[in-house]
Length: 107
Image 1 (tube, rainbow, N blue to C red):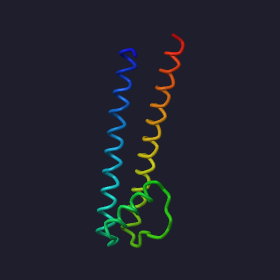
Image 2: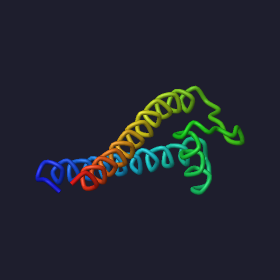
Image 3: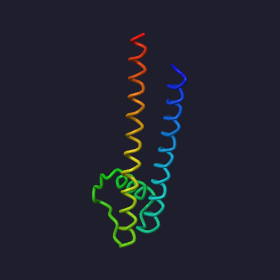
């Protein structure tokens, strides 16, 4: 593996760690918010945070006040961005591995 490839792999891994940390922070923030303002149990708050951030939205729990609806709008937008960033990094990692295998095969 070349120095550039190693450096790219380290950068991608570090970027992925930050995206995961950000995702966990957003889920934690949503969970605290929904626990506090929708008066959900902690498990329901985490559940609602995850299904909201991934845009699944089963409809069994939903925001009921204007404030919680407004928070949820921004929460979904942030969540979609985090999911997109995570998928982008995973695709980049898969592409790097494929290119490395191809390079080794051609040697």
